[in-house]
Amino acid sequence: MARSIWKGSIAFGLVNIPVEVYSAVRDHRPKFRLLHAKDESPVQYERVCQEEGKPVAWEDLVKGYEYAKGQFVVLTKEDFKTAALEKTKTVDILDFVDPGGVDERYFETPYYLLPGKGAERAYVLLRDALRETGKMGVAKMILRDTQHLCAVEAIEDALVLTMMRFSDELADLAEFNFPHKEDVRPAELKMAQQLIGNLTSKWDPDKYTDEYTENLMRVIQAKMKGRKPHLKEERVPREAEVVDLMARLRASLEGKGVKGRARREPAERGTASKHRRPVRKTA
Image (tube, rainbow, N blue to C red; front, side):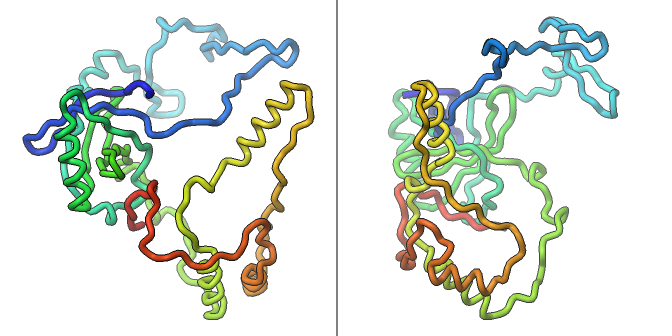
């Protein structure tokens, strides 16, 4: 098992549960380095002063806030200490809320919480209480010198901690020009709903794969062996121009232009996958 990235405790009321935080995601994408095309040697990055055009050593660097073009306020270590919060080792649950009422845009990266030594009983108690009440804990914690808003949820046998965004981090919908009302014909709407019904199926995360990364690894492995790669069949790109909606909807319902996808019957309602997160409402 991977190493924990944080050790502390969950605190709510007077209850304190020792926990360890582990990453819940795995990055399988290939990593690349920039090379010199002439001799394929790795390229080394340098910190160059724009004024002098010379490299700058780490010990000669300071941090500055650019408040106007080319105008900076230099901050020292003492300045950061002055603004720093107390580095507590707790996930402080502030409220318990209905997860269905939380906008999905607030959620970021998930982590698994495992009980610390001797904390299994308290861990199960919180997990089962969250599951039975259908609630989600909203908490704050300090991770890597930064305060984070986070959610604590019960998913299967795990307590899952998900980093969240603060409200001022979301762009206001009013800043964008979304279409409010268009002349959509009832027949078009009915056919669109029928198409959605035909393409509705049970949620199975394992059937959605990263085909680009798979093909890229095939290219890499073939080049290592001096062979030509055997790639998955390319799909026809979707057209981006304005089209006749009725014609496209009708063709979709007849199975045309849906390459490699069979028509499916609507899934049974109420079916949940073992990987399913709680359903949330979008604001």
